Length: 539
Ligand code: ATP
Ligand code: MG
Image 1: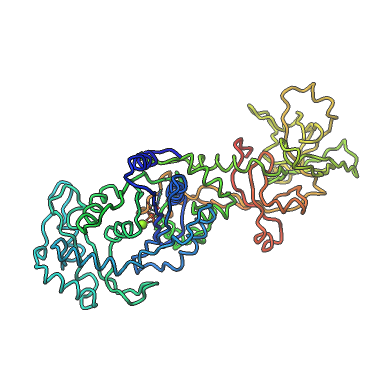
Image 2: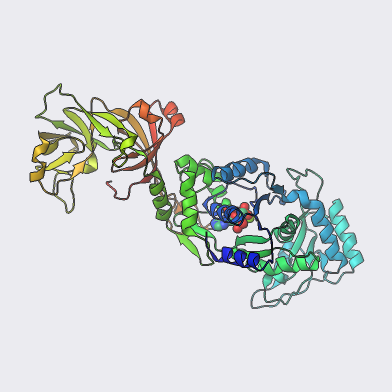
């Protein structure tokens, strides 16, 4: 692992600035983890491992409006699934509420914080802009005594929500908006899932995060780039609280994946609007949905390694993740499946002809063993593997031409049978012994399944959920959603039930699929869900 953060850590260790690395992954339990979080998980846990340090899992549960309970288990499960553990280093910011309060009082006593009674809108207006200086609140110069009284009132529930808040007294003229007297504490009458009715005032992220890091002795506090300016505030708070040797914050860029969203808020909106069923829907990029979709955890880790950590903007194509998946799925058993079937009758084969062919389960791994497939007069091939006219680079079955059936004979398409709407329903063919293969250069090879021995299967095929490369949270949701992002196809498979235990397969020339036992039960037919296509698309 090598990136600008590991470089800094190496230096810090070498200079004996620190002796043991401590990092933390601080999820807010307000949703499931997504692929963006995986980057942060990988970074924090892996760095700790690499430098023989420790990584804390800290739930940033300071917001009482969020029912953390609902999400804590899913977050823990997902981190474990990715292969990381934290032993007893499981912390909750809400465990530190007393300490946050103590420090808030300390700042007030040092005349570095005051209770403001401006409304949220007024505070925003008074803050100014990058071009305009901020204006001091009329409550800014209250006495320490008055501030302590007012803060106590806030704590006791004697002031209504939105009517007062605690602000740091920094600089209303600072070029950085973050430093123009940021809010440290606000009133929330909502019951907290953990501390119940103990508190009526709750700290903001800026106030609680740096103190939590200090309490746990975090050495390197790694966060995403949007907190770059907050670093000054992070340092201001800890310095003024006279906390020694506090952690240093370093920022890295957020991961965005094209045609996807990596934001819990956005995913919630998709669920609320019934665009997707839940957090595990295979069309989004939560860790749970990737797992559900059939991705392996080592695929996600491989992806994190590949993406790395930088400060540059990270808009990544989904194909990067898909390539990692292909690499990790390479060892799957090969199986033939027909997703859009069309019937082929090989007239030169006798009616009751049955030929058992033994084929390898994996072309490169002979030790994976063999399985039996059956060839008969009537077979299915993919619709897209047949054309009545010749096309450029189309090495498949063309009317009047030859193609090789994988593991079997060469066939020539002689005639087509159409229904009354003009759809091709059957292709009539003639077969040739393989001996003649040499004489036909450049012949294409297609896959097939015996009609008589085929097993019915349903294939769930997923497309991008969004039609926009970078979906916008604030825009109309429906206009950004692609229609038919889930297509269900009824086709066939040559699989034996013994092999089904394998779960993941490569359907030759199509892609990698995962067998879904519970959907199979519901549908009373074998169901396979597509993980990722193979690189060369056939349809
Ligand atoms: P969301 O927008 O999904 O709610 P968040 O940053 O608010 O994201 P947190 O639960 O607060 O979610 O994040 C925990 C950690 O994961 C933070 O350190 C955050 O910086 C990091 N993180 C979140 N999203 C990404 C992302 N897309 N890329 C990299 N790191 C991320
Ligand atoms: Mg957050």
